[in-house]
Length: 115
Picture 1: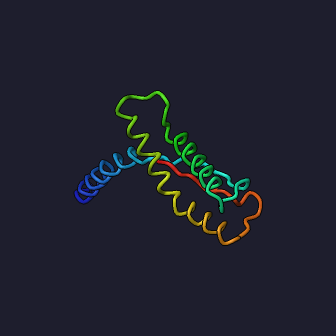
Picture 2: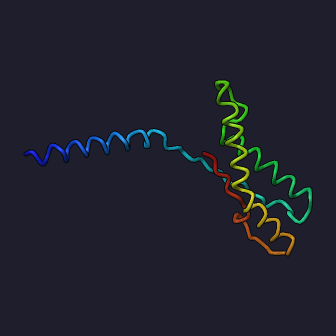
Picture 3: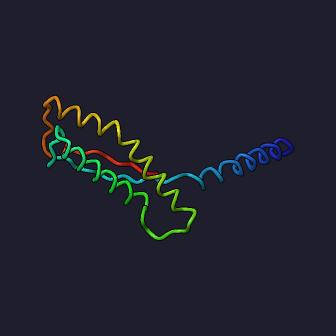
């Protein structure tokens, strides 16, 4: 009986430490941005893809939507982070296009992820 009291106390402390972490867990959202119709070997194709990526990142992060003043900058930062995270995939797609690598059908897309 006396041994169970410290065990229950330890369990209670552990639960108190875990609950706040679960409450702060961030949800992620993602969207597919196709470039199947673009020629990424050209500047105009690249610019069009960047605009599509930026629009998608803004939509996922809620940029331009009504929100409390303090959340406006957070939405902007979210969009910038989403674009930065997608940059390596963008660069690979452009490099593949410049080297004549063919991507067939719906596989020609990037995934934009926001938190």
